[in-house]
Image (cartoon, rainbow, N blue to C red; front, side, top):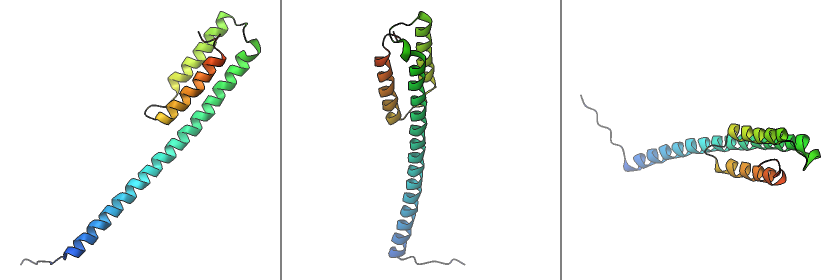
Length: 114
């Protein structure tokens, strides 16, 4: 025995709207999660970049202009290692932020970083 249900056009539209709203809510939740992840990544990068600036100040600030070849090697190795380990892949905001800070360090310590 077959049972036929008559579903009104109005009911179909309401069901479709509910589905769309649920999908929209899920997408919004994921976007908020991504936003929170980006916020944490920016905070972590800020901490790491502050460490990098302080490290250069501690190691090289007092000897501006009178650096040995070993100090130049250390400065370049520290910066290279930091850049290799900085996780900014796929995030243009983090990349630009990192680029600005590194550019400032390279200008300030241009004698070391040749």
